[in-house]
Length: 115
Length: 114
Image (tube, rainbow over all chains, first blue to last red; front, side, top):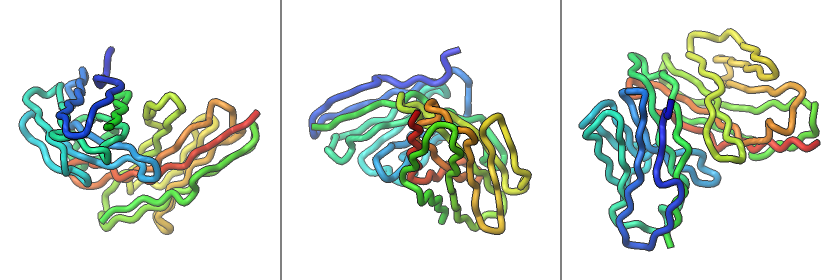
């Protein structure tokens, strides 16, 4: 049971380059989320998706783009990476819930360093 | 707006001591959910517990216990007889609304020394 996976696990890139972080889940969960974790901030929501082709912005969406053509995949793209996007990125998924309280399960994270 | 405050940045204890992590939340919604997650040094996020706003019954699970009090908007977490393996960052989180977005606190680092 693979659950939720992220790739790559570690990435070093340079300012201005485009980077795509992949997220794949095998549970057929409807909801998927991208968070970034920075010291002192906990985790902050970047984008989320309720189903294929339904996405919306979270708290810190600037500089990021997402897509969801298939239920199981939710890639996050940094269009032109900046040093401030150096962070640990977590993908999460949850079942469809009427009141929004379903538990989110997290992937292992991707450590991104932008030089 | 929703907000989660974990005022304790770091707590250091000696093994077998009890440790209580504080979590205070703010929301205008009457239906909401509270969570605790653990992040060990390996970095993954591990789900510990979920509580809805209509269930104030406190829970004990092994060495873990949770105290949910709506009157003070608090959802505290206690580790009894701490062990070195409890060393981790613990996050409190709040969710409300149909999308289930999580608002996290800044986290509390727990260091348990032998």
